[in-house]
Length: 401
Image (cartoon, rainbow, N blue to C red; front, top):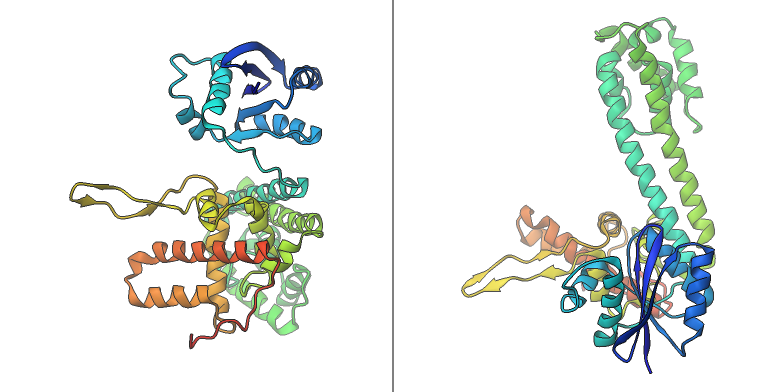
């Protein structure tokens, strides 16, 4: 007798329906705490080889998945869209109890495969990488705020260096958020401040050039705010707020490297020309254990670069990617392709050669399609290397091929 546990997970609790012989033999509501999981374990032990299915509900379902992983039990977790389609025939009304029963009946009909249980390190890497992405988003917001404030206090300082990123620039803004603060100092004093504003070794001549340019810009500046206005103090604070998440990003990458120390995938990915440690760690964190994908097309679908085709009668729409699933993975893979193409100057690959060939033979408006094709190639390469535990052979391709 097949016994199926359908679990509908919400924020603090879950509805459980136990289906046997095509009827619900028991249902109950459990809290997502030790008492609730003890009750669930007791019910599971009363049946022989129970099947479990629940819907992925973001962070809420992770507690349920963690319970089954700790107990060493198989389970099936399906995404909300898949659950909705599978339960269409069973859902005439909607509430949590009926959803739990619907999940169980969908399992009885479609026999979904058990969810591949990754090693905990992949979940740890994913959490760290999402934290890294949050720091990125914090930096973007902080930089936008800083830019707006500088337009009032000292807009010219944005041109003192070639980039408005980096510790040196942020330290200069913290020290000189208003041109009057620059004009109060002598050139030698500003030069010393420049040299002290970066942990890197900076030559005296370069520091003097920066100091001289800063002085020239300060003399030309006509800010909207006075040096004593509150916005000047706020600007210095905002420059510090940009620097803080940048430091946290560096720390997060270090933690990711330490967590992935025992995984061979990072070393394998780093042998692909253009992929460094940070990109390799972020790719691995978002893709997880690549061995769970039955094909490269499955990775494409997971990332959201699988193509959608629409044809009706004489009309055929242009193919486009699905753009659902993992937006972070798409972003990282796109950056990886850019790096691979850049590295092709010294170490060409089939991916970079195909990208450049298509780029030269097509119009610029097809750049996204070409990038997606290259990402698909990269997925095939990554899967092949990891499944076979191979390093990338840099001599396997030559531009003449």
